[in-house]
Image 1 (cartoon, rainbow, N blue to C red):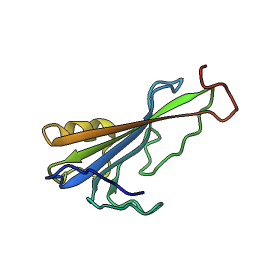
Image 2 (cartoon, rainbow, N blue to C red):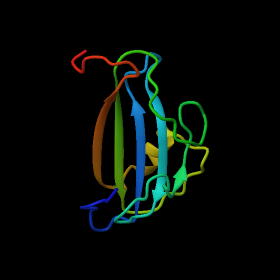
Image 3 (cartoon, rainbow, N blue to C red):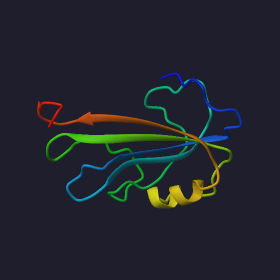
Length: 121
């Protein structure tokens, strides 16, 4: 994946991937910060600190909706600094830590279901 148009002054990137269609409320699949600013990211070689997902694990948890079509939000934050945040942190702590440090935010939404369902449902 090639990253274009990273804002000038970006010192690090942070990422949040969540599913807001989860039947038990929001499910956070992936939280990362202090990702180095590079023009190319090699698949399966993410660098940075991985925080806790909804399961309380420091790992990426791929899409696996228990029901219907779910919308997954990938948010990448360009930050003007590195973060002093322990790996025991999750989404809430990351969002608090990046306040005042966000240069720009990019959002990608993807929809997925385990069964073949019409996109309009």
